Structure formats: C-alpha cells, structure tokens
Length: 310
View 1 (cartoon, rainbow, N blue to C red):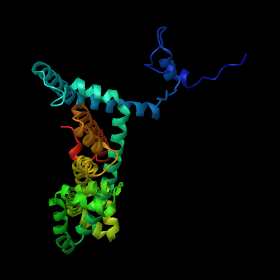
View 2 (cartoon, rainbow, N blue to C red):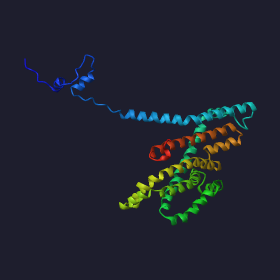
View 3 (cartoon, rainbow, N blue to C red):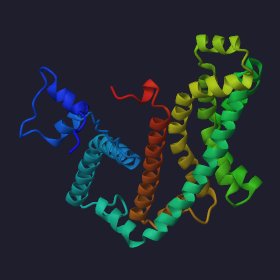
View 4 (cartoon, rainbow, N blue to C red):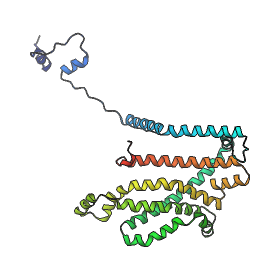
C-alpha cells in the first residue's frame, strides 16, 4: 500500500493554531479549508429588469394615489350634488350618466379619440420640430433672432380661432389644416425654450471644447443639445396639451371625425352626457401623453436636478 502525499489541506490541519473541524461543521467550511472559492452568481438580466419595473410601478403608485383620491372625492361630491338638487342631465349630467354614455358606445369615443390624437401628434411634430430647428439657427445668430422673433411673437398672439377658417380655405377640408393649427399653437413655446436651452451652456465646458478645436457641429451635438434637453422637455409639457386643443379647435371648424366633431354633434343634440364623455376622452389622452412624457424625461434626464426626488 503506497503512502499518500500530504496535500495543502493536511498541512493546514497540522499547522499550529489551526481550527479542528467538528462534526457540526457545514460543507461550506470544509470547502473553504480545501481552498475552494465559492462563486457568487450575479442576478440575471431579466431579474434586474423585473426589479426596475417593480420599482417604477411602486414610484408610480406613490405618485398617483393622491390625485386619484382627490378625483374620487370630487366625483362623489358631484354625484351627490346632482342627485340632491335633482339637476336634469341636459344641464349637468352626473358622473354615472357620463359613464353610461361612454359605455353605451365605446367604439365611437375611442375612434374619435384616436383621430384627435393623430391630429395632435402630427401638429406637435410639425410645430415643435420646426420650432426647434429654427431655434437652433437663432441660438447661433443674434441678428437672425432679432429679425425673426417679432414674426414668431405675431403667431403667438394671433387667436387661432381667427385664422382657422383661412387655413381651411387654403388647405381644404382634410387633415392638413388640423396639423397646421395644432402646429401653430405649439410653435412658440418650443421656440423660446429651444433658444434659451441651446444658449445655456457651461462656460468652462464651452472653453474646453474650443481649446480642443471642436467644430460647431461637435459643440452642438455634445454640449448644446444635452444642455437644452431640460428646456425642451419643459416646452413639451406645455405643447402636448396645446396640441390637443389645436386639434379640437380645427375639428370644430370642419371635420367628419374626431373629438371636436363629436362635441359639435353632442352640443347640437343637447346630449350633455356625450359631450362630457368627449371631454373625459380628451382628458384621458392628455394625462396619458403627459405621463409618458414624464417617464421619458426621467429616463433621459436622470443626471439633471429637475427630475430628482428631494
């Protein structure tokens, strides 16, 4: 029988002061005595995503329950007031009457909301996108800003209801005037914020880019554009509801679909519950768009103090 050569574990066991494994020692202790290293597994990517999703849902629930509670209390008071005073539906419908009107023909309201959403988003892209492009040019030229700013201000102060009939005459009765009206009403907020944001850059960072001989395009992409994002999102928070207003105003003037056309028909029929139902649809679209915009802002501007929770 050949003698076994002592290994490292035996040498450690014979060393002075070495702990003698007892009968209650776990396998982990024995593995450590043998010199093995236990590898700690990192959480999988799917688990991390689920954890982030749960964290977002919890944050949304914490932020959403106060306005939800206020809305429930307001609806309860509204319902009680209508029932106690016995107000007829054609004057002020109760929340249950509005809910019945929505439930009676949901396809009608959903279809009208989808059309108005299309008009609003098309106008937002047209107006806000054009305003940002013009603001980028104006931010690099004070002369151009002084030349074009009065015309932009004229677009802002002109009542949109006054020029909507002209736009219908010029562009016809299709979707084009709806996009133009929604674009005009969102143009000025984005223009002002884009110019301000593109000029609000850190002086030291700008000097560093100049010292590195960076081109104007590199300065714009890597310095001015990131610095302007808080101002751009602030303008979008204003422009999204305005785009819905512009789309509905244009649909009042001439449309065969959309929430604006639905409101006109309900008004003519003295169908006040349906009219309030159309308003509820508009409010739901506005809240959904604003909430989605807030999520995108928190995702992109995690580094900015405007999205931090104090």
